[in-house]
Image (cartoon, rainbow, N blue to C red; front, side, top):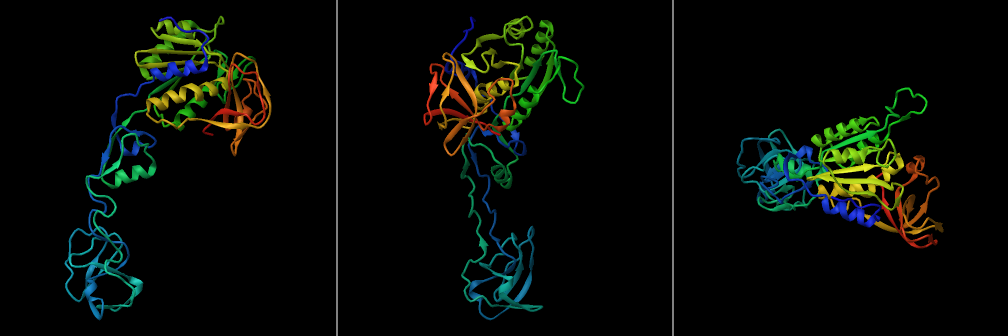
Length: 397
């Protein structure tokens, strides 16, 4: 395949979107499904509540017996396994969540009775028949559709599934990811630095960002600036993961080996440069259904390219549309840029207006800690005026 060179941002997005396919659905324990998406409808397997039950600590009675003395017949705690039928002119001590005994139709709160050792008198003159009783199926009925295919599972939804006794559900699985940081100058945080060395931060950022996206199967590798080593680590990543993210070595310098290593691993290159800043050298390839992204080594460029290209592809694979949407905001000040490149700028959006932050150079990371969005300025434009509406992508931090 002959790759496209120096393509517009919109074309790069379109190519990636056309190749990011959902993985085959699979079953997963409900406790491991937080943040993932249902691949099929879910129907209730039982009534909720599963039986008539008390919603209060009190006494189960027949409403017709509310006047006069009621003899105590027994006690029903929550979790009672045996049923005791309530007889006329009697009351049974009952607790919240306990099954309502046959013959009873009302529960009187314990604060609303005069109780002796063997009898009670109801003092609640406003009580109605059926008070403080949860009827079987009042919340959910067996066979009812409770969650549609495409539902994003939250903690409350997982609690509901577990409450119905559902232990396993089918979801669109998140992709597995291998991150490969290239560059012999990179050192692990906490180690001593020699002259010319820098701390490696890209795998830490990408790992944390993937965790926020509910992608949990992530491996990180390091490759020195040698073709055989990059080729070997990339081959290893392809054996491990659905998506491989490489950082650094993606340009055309003497020590940039990502493109050649990808070719040697049989990867089809779809493009290698994008008309954008930061992140002009940006590689995207595929091998069967695997996606391979070659990101620049500069941390600021990695962050930008991840949110603009990689994360949308992952959300598409996981069937989570709309989680990383584009918005618009009003520009707070005039701005000039170079023509011919889409420019992604660190911005701060508040109440529908956006400011472009200082410190836009690609080596500056501090401004990312202050930003809450990326502002995208069109490649064909050179000037923007205060009050113009511009495209922004909100950042999840």
